[in-house]
Amino acid sequence: MSADLETRLRALGARRYHNLHPFHRMLHAGECSKGQVQAWALNRYYYQSMVPLKDASLIGRCEDVALRREWRKRLEDHDGDDTRPGGIERWLRLTDGLGLDREMVVSTRMLLPATRFAVQAYLHFVRERSMLEAVASCLTELFSPQIISERMSGMLAHYDFITPDIMAYFDQRPPQAERDAQFALDWVTRHARTAEQQQRVVDTLAFKCDVLWSMLDALHYAYVTPGLIPPGAFVPDV
Image 1 (cartoon, rainbow, N blue to C red):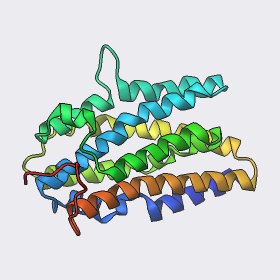
Image 2 (image 1 turned 60 degrees about the horizontal axis):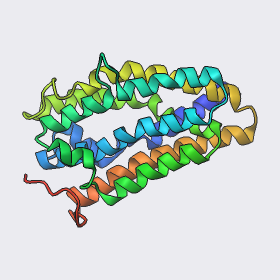
Image 3 (image 1 turned 90 degrees about the vertical axis):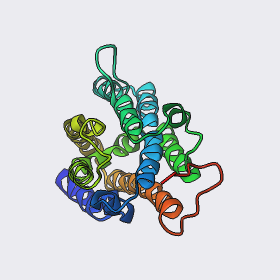
């Protein structure tokens, strides 16, 4: 039964993970302007910044000591500590390197509205749904090493304003994602014992794929076609 669940999850990711989105295809193929890359990094920052809040909310209502202990690693990975920067700080080095004002980025005041709505929907999902669904919402990490590999090779090859230094976020993320994804997959396959529970896990992964896809839909609509940037959102210089 657990092998069948994993097969279903991986098949869903192969069809619906956001590496297939046209905006990502443009980004990785070197077809974006600098302004479009800036818009992507700015809006994705909001998602990155909310990940620790999502993880802390899961920990805060979790009665499983082993799960809480494992999940704390995710907070450390994103927030860092006194000895090392976390993923949020490394993402800000990317936006710094792209020429975006850090205060503007951190304020999130120039986000696309759809970005805010999508990320908040994810945050509320983890806070309000069952623990099984909250853990399962992280299973998109099963597919993130692939997209990170495509991103690193494509962006470094195609954009003269992209350097290895400002892409440092992606150096450390693949092993973290593989560790986290395997733990979450093992946990949900142990706890999704019935057909109904397994369907909830599959539906949760579909929801999370929709969150990530909708963020790229918003970027494509605002900055590619038809190019309608909402009032108050970031307007690139180039």
